[in-house]
Amino acid sequence: MRPEALNFIVCPNCAGELSLRSDASRASEDGHIMTGTLACRGCPLQFSIRNGVPILLPANLASVKLETASRFAEEWTPWSDPRDYYEQEFFDCVAPLAAGDFANQIVFEGGCGKGRHTAIVASHGAKAIVALDLGESAFVAFAHTRQFPNAHVVIGHLLNPPGRPVFDLAFSVGVLHHLSDPAAGFASLASRVREGGRVAFWVYDQEGDEWITRYVDPVRKAITSRLSASFLRIASIPPAAALWAVIKLFYRPRMVKAPRDFLTAIISLRFITTRSMRFTPTFSINS
Image (tube, rainbow, N blue to C red; front, side):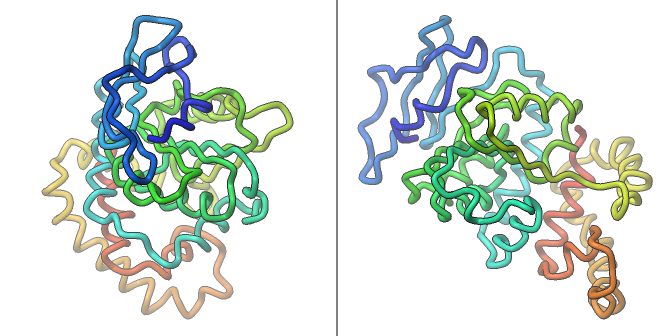
């Protein structure tokens, strides 16, 4: 983390100010403090900095939420390399916001995964972006964004966001529908935005993607979320291959006339990304 992050982050338990303790490592050549401890000035709690990322988890965080985050991290870590189509995909999700809407803004991201959207926002001139994720995928996000002086990655929980209410804009792409209480997640993230600021959220919709919530979700909750990630990674290959074939052979010729739904959204994805990002998380996350 860079010391400038202290202008935006707070204790997740009491919202008190945080300060670096004397055990913090010297800043690296690119300005990051890689290890150390943050102490809250409002309560006795302390939080570690590990591999450049402050870990600001609330004291009452349930173990099931950490397990869910771990499942997501298992996907972001093996398939962590950025792709050239991410930028267009991101701006499609947050439309009508465009690149210029992020310039000179203080931005909060709820659920950053491997940091693909964090890097996009940072590269488009945000004054600062604080990117939050619950799992160890935050370390991947840090590696992808550490070259940006305006990017700050934090491990924390979206329902107890360790941020000051000073942000001009907050966004979350593909995260809220995985929470046990999506409405609470919406309100929590929006609470970090100053009066007059803006928020943008992207979630699964009922119109194009109803088949996911109607047919896939029951199987996920009852069966596949209880299986090991290593088994699911292998088991997801046949259904991903079937979907890939349907998309390329039958759906792609109709994409100009097709509605903007799940299938049109993944037409441009490579097979390995389709399998990793669509099937394995869908079947393994028990939110």
